[in-house]
Amino acid sequence: MEQIKNKTERIHSLDSLRAIMMLLGLVLHSALTYNVINHGENWPLKDPESTNIVTDFIVFLIQFFRMPIFFLIAGFFGSMLFYERKPTRMIKNRISRIIYPFIVFLFILWPTIIFTFSYTEAVFSDSNNTLKKATESVLFSDFLPKATFHLWFLYYLLLITFTTFLLALLLKKSKKITNRITTSFNWLIQKPILRILFFSGISFLLYVFMGTSMIEVSVYLKPDLNTFIFYSFFYIVGWVLFKSKHLLDTIMEYDWISFILAIIIAIILGLITQNWDPETMMTQYLNSKLIMLSNAFIIWLFIFGITGLFIRYGSKHSKKMRYISDSSYWVYLIHLPLTVIIPAFVLKLPLPALVKFIIVLSLTTLICFVTYHYLVRNTFIGKFLNGKKYPRKIKEKPVANTV
Image (cartoon, rainbow, N blue to C red; front, side, top):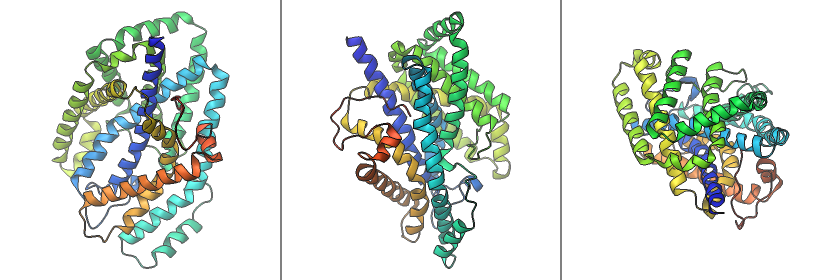
């Protein structure tokens, strides 16, 4: 009985970690506007009044682990649906929880995001009639969305989920292969140093195969092969991890050391590349085998470090964490227009970039959670996103949110 309780608590900690990885998107997008580095078309906004290198490091660190951890946990819960609720129920769940929200919010957010980007760009460039220009940008834009923006992860989650689903159906017919994979994974996951070396090695080979040390987020509807391959790897690791869920406690070994080491190496890497010639920096960064190897190690040190820490400290039921987990889907879906337009209203405030960043993040977070509490949690929207309506006050025991 105690073992079942512990297993449930460990799974709950992974669900909490999934939610935090989604909510870190608010931090990321709030910081980008105040970065020193130019992000080009990926993020055309840059506060002309103030920037700060600290925001660059915030983005730099978060991008190492946020999506790899998210896709790994998504694979874990995808596997749980496949093996515990049967394949047909898994497909129905993925359709209702991913496909429908993706389509609906893509069409709802498309004009909103165009408007907010256009408005803030006009304000930053000190243009006249900013509201008129932003409105015209929406009126003259295509009705059908051409980009997924921050919903790209749902798009690739769909592609990866259904590809893995088909692969799992094929392997399900061969118990010898699946048993051998599970046995080998069980052995590997219990070796803290070896597992980091092994998975880092595969990630390094993927970087070499793709010819780049940086996987650009693809926000277009035409699938990008590098993005698909890269995140499929983490999803599959999470899928196999579910079969070894009784060994989740072993991830806590060296968790603090892994986490601290990942931060140290990432900061050193950031400081080194900071001094590179800007004109050749990206070419050097993208093609360097040493950078590829460093990135691979940093990612897996972060994965085992952060996951281990969440299993260690986040396994006990918390009403606050349960609420955050329930709200994370809605909060992530609607946050981007807010992080885009709020900087326009704080532009002229005589404040340093870090303070502006905190204001943008705080206001975005407040608006997202207030709207969730009063407009979503106990309404049909909450049921649409999370599969059920939740009472405003949390009384029930935690159930894994399998977004």
